[in-house]
Image (cartoon, rainbow, N blue to C red; front, side):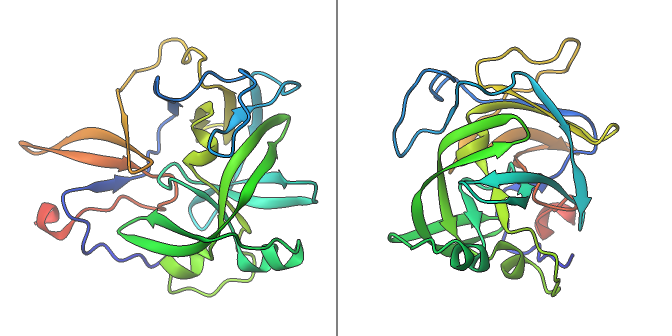
Length: 230
């Protein structure tokens, strides 16, 4: 994948190759609370909790099957570095989904312009998340110089993941989903994070300097601003 690394400012972006467990902060409403608004994603009653299922790797990205609305399974990228979730224009056309205004999506070092659609229900294996904010945007073609035929049609960002505590295990190629108020796995290393512009931010140290870094599973490699790399 060809990704530009200029104009990253003071932020770093990285994708971890170790087991990652992320739990939403206290600002996210408790899961299974029954809250049902266009702005608040929540785990639905009837979900398997916890739910562990396999994932595949596509172009270095984490890909899982997802049931989007009432349709057939689609391939979806799990992207912790993207505030919103999105579908491709081809999927929107196939499902006759109409745009309802504009929606900007922060992605890597840029802001992509898409179209807002009504909140959606998604199902990951036996884990269901309702009222997920979505946009229409062709993510991959905007961040890569490659042309591919098997591009995933759904990108799942923090508009859905903020309702979960997600554990990604690259050794087993498995994902475990729990409600956001669940406890992290035992014996794990806990690292505090914050949401900034809808993205997961942690503090990292490179040499003697400290930086804010985006935890981004939508990046196939670690990215550094040129000033930091030098």
